[in-house]
Length: 351
Image 1 (cartoon, helix red, strand yellow):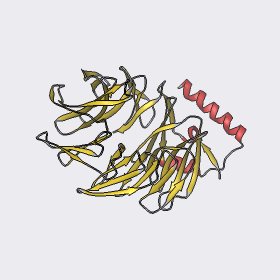
Image 2 (image 1 turned 90 degrees about the vertical axis):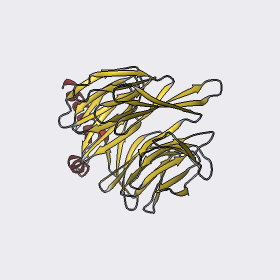
Image 3 (image 1 turned 90 degrees about the horizontal axis):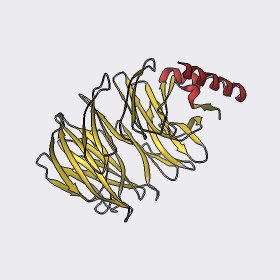
Image 4 (image 1 turned 30 degrees about the horizontal axis):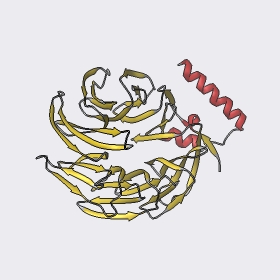
């Protein structure tokens, strides 16, 4: 099978300087946050840097509405979208983790890690208004690994000791929902009719209008999940991908992230090499193999644009039509291709 080099397929490549930890596209901007606390916005059309901001890292999560809201280190930041001006900062203690927005509020979690027990022992859920005033704080034992606002309820997928998920309504009443198997949540994603949770024991839980369906995958922890048009796809730490379309594909390594774009499922796999496989979304057959020199940790897409970031801090943007054309080109001799890639890298540095 013909192999393609990732950077050679991209429309532009930028460098954050350290590992990219958050990646999101909003309007005409590609926004990324790094392990060292750097946040940068680039123009999607031409790759021009719109603004950059430095805070205490690592950047944990990003949500956008009237402003950009960022959790980083032990703080919550509010950033003006167009110029990147830091408007306010709140210290929330512990390790700030997840952030989600509703019409009037910012919800953010902060977890405490105890070195003695080598685990998280307490989490605080904060509610702020858009002017940084704290409205409510709620404490519980478990660390949440998934957070969404759905049907006027806050949903948190949690780890030990209780596992399952918490549902918090507008009156701050907390309902704990147990899930068969009592396995900690590793991640989750919102779907058209509910949400999907991945577990450390390799199972997935599909919640649709309060109907719960537990599907046992393999025994390895779920590491990636995507959902589109009520179809889903999950990957695990053993290198296996399973789709609700009825297919399963096995690799050797860890599935770091998945993306559903057009006719393809993009699967980022890390082992002794670092590859992205483009799989037929209907049957899982490999259509293209894309190689890279560093582990791919995050992928995101909107409309016809795809963003990818790696462990060294490179952020790459792809345009579907251009990407499709380049994937169809005959591969050059490997030495010539490496020379072309090096020349492209030098030209990008000059820009």
